[in-house]
Length: 197
Image (cartoon, rainbow, N blue to C red; front, side, top):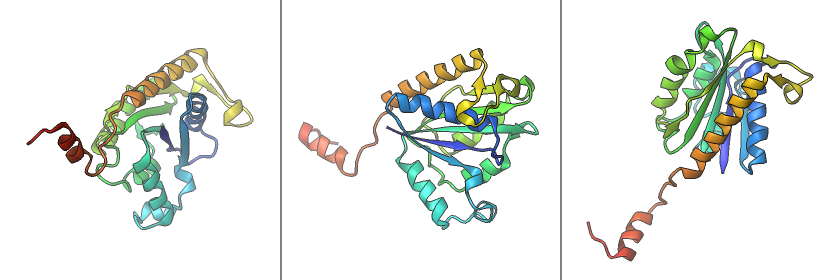
């Protein structure tokens, strides 16, 4: 299985990046390959000018196409997800998330921003035709303590438990995900079964 994680924070020091790092570690322990992207790693000109032909953007689109699932994490700014993340998602094809499981994660200063996941981020992911969108996680900034780096940061016990529960649900959703049929596979199956349409 292949999962793509997308960090929407333009900052190097980011609580949403800490959440993604924890998710990556947990999924890798389950034997899942995780490829990580951060919006700040893409050239700003490619995002701002919607350069679909950028080699870095094309490579990103190719990996997303191969993925079984995505984890998308963002800080909440002004009651919405990051604008940098929106510009990156805008570079994906219209049906980029079809047949994929998506877990949204957001971090913000207070619980008042919790609905940004449902009312801002999820509609964009749904527009990309996500097959299954999980409930998602919202973490208050006070629940995440910085360390020397993302690996040494700490989450509150309650947040740690919610994240692990969401990742277990994500893993189960990936396992039950129907596999897309390969070109010509339906016809061969019908012939082998001696069915006719």
